[in-house]
Image (tube, rainbow, N blue to C red; front, side, top):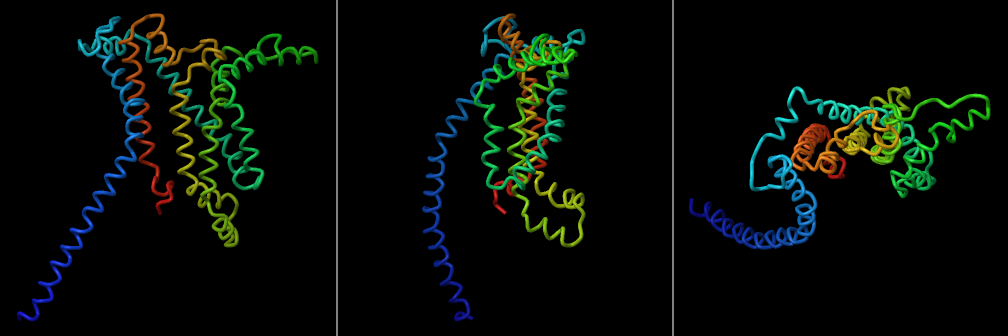
Amino acid sequence: MSELTLPHAEERPTGTRLEARSTPAARKKVSRGLLSSLPVLVVLLLGFLAPLATVAAYAFATPRTFDVFRSFTLINFETIFDPANTVWMSFAWSLGFAAATVVVLAIVAYPIAWGLARVFGRWAGFVSVLFVFPLFVSENVRLYGWTLFFIKNGVLDGTLKLLGGAGPEVLYTPGITLFGMVYVYLPFMLFPMVLGLAMVPKELVEAARDLGASRLMIWREVELPLAMPGIMIGMLLTFVLAVGAVAESKILGGQSVIVATHDIEIAFTYAQNWPLGSALALILTIIVGALSLIALTKLDLDRILGRR
């Protein structure tokens, strides 16, 4: 019996020594990783968490004061949720415009993304630059350019008058506001879609075609499910940016509708009511954050990052 138990007795110290040797190395590796990530952590703390914490603190301050961290009140939220207050309309417009922008861009950008990923080949980089180029010009400059295009006696109206017609009255309407948002946020939907479609193996599509699958079936059963992570990221990115849009409703829409970000801007500037503006911003952040977390639960991040 003792001979049978000796090997087990000798193996335990060996395993213990191996574990003891590997532990310091693992700790050293973790500490190096932590040190390497410190710059990123500092940037996130100073650039994201600190402003968010300040806004959250101001949301509970006394209205029209700067008594942050020295007072605590719910008056700002009571004002917002007062049934007589119509501020909820601005939130509805912001969320509605953002959702409509996502839907329109999903329909418009998908064929373009498919062409960039499958058709253009070596010209895909050049074509991509054409879509990125507008981002090098200020958003306000581009929107004022569209204003000059659609305004009465502008480019469109003047050209149609020369031909014996007249330009449509499209400026300062909710429709032109949506058009401006679709125009501005197209690149943010397009490139994640291109990435998603690029993840679809061509061999898999060809195999499905060889097995007799129709083009619609290949798109529904192969391309769309595999490209969905990129599509979802594009939708999420576009939605988050579109909720915070304000220039489109001011320049093209002429404030025909008031969005939530405009109410926040007014509270921080003309009204000089920073606590109320912070409360509005905090509510909007919570809504967008909750919707974003719901969307992220539908994403396979391991597949997107190539871990499996």
